[in-house]
Length: 235
Image 1: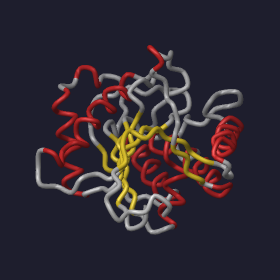
Image 2 (image 1 turned 60 degrees about the vertical axis):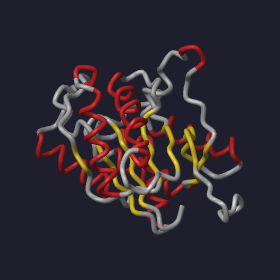
Image 3 (image 1 turned 90 degrees about the vertical axis):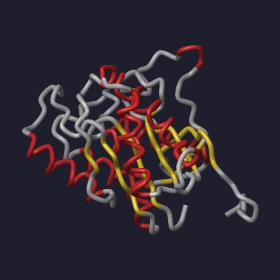
Image 4 (image 1 turned 180 degrees about the vertical axis):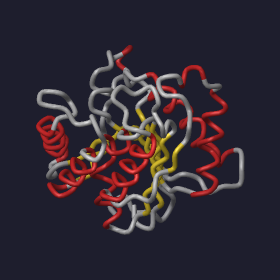
């Protein structure tokens, strides 16, 4: 994934770090440009939410720690994406795809417990196909991410649970940067055994790495990956 512009599309501030923080850090260190599009940037219905200005500072700092560009924030209503016309979500995401021309996109799994995650995912799935309707470069890879306390809490509907098949090594430093970034958000990190505790995040990263034979990893579910003639499967 060199030269790449990477776009994550998530519902709320902290999702981008929970699902992609370690990967963001290691990819940015290897030359990738990372953009995080957060559809509900103000999360007004969030319990114990800091003041708007303070949340903006926390969100910006969280991106900086993991090497991402300043966040792209929408103002869709928190925990009410089901009340927003699907097309509005799709077109908002499409605008950023046209502007940024990302090579790879990461978003929520459609069967996360959180309703906003579900609607983000299905809107992103539609937006990713923009290259089939407009003259924009096609996306080379599209992936679902894993959000502790959402992906893992969802009841598997007809077997449609998060099923990782792509593992990105983040190493101990990437894990530490992820946790440091999460700590910038008030109230996100919790005490063990909550899924958003240091102990569980470390254990999950170690487990995902062990599944792939690498040291600490974040896992993803590949929706599709484009490989052209001349591309090496071994690169």
